[in-house]
Image: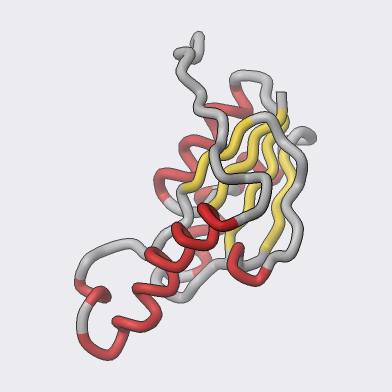
Length: 123
């Protein structure tokens, strides 16, 4: 089974990626490494995944991508963390990385709904 995890280098996305890899999934991770957190933190989050043969990282902004890999499951975790950036000077960045990402995914032709993984992983 093949899974796509957007925001794979973030806190939640990296943990999900690790769990999918332990479950035997092939994982394609997408992250654009915004500067909200230091890049080193996000690189450390996916350090183990990068050493797995069944993990591929695509470093790109999902809003800039024309085509997505064919997968069985999509886990959309890409977002701007925190609420402090949702007001003031950072408002435009925050809305782009949260609202527009969600709108973009819902507008992709042929990708209006994604399969949802409902089965629990076995340890």
